[in-house]
Image (cartoon, rainbow, N blue to C red; front, top):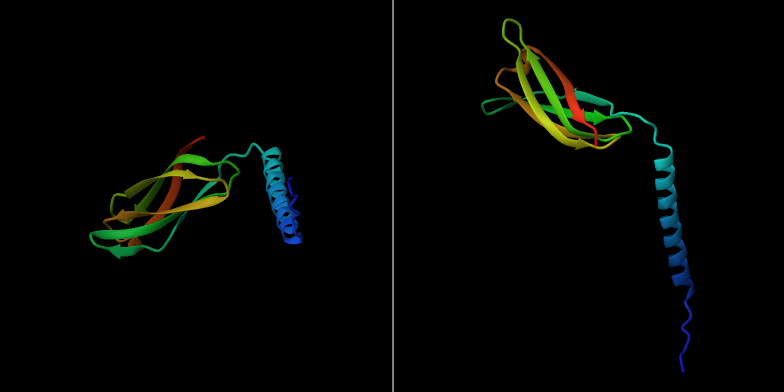
Length: 128
């Protein structure tokens, strides 16, 4: 003879809340996929304050992707232009930057960046 076990109200409440969370997540993902525009990555390079380090100067670099598509293999170049000297360049690569996010890194220079002008740019990326 089998005995039927009834669920108590707490079990039903947990089930209902879990179901609502799963359905809301699924609904958001469907909505997000259906409304994605054919937007490309929008990469912006932001340079921070140089810091002295052993053997040179380190500059923090933040790459923002304000677009609606992920960028892979992002190649970033930072140039230091000092009066009377050849421009000094530093580069680094970012594996990927998801849409609406950022990645941070550092580049180094031998010369003091505070005596010149720093510029940064994303030189290229791959489409995932």
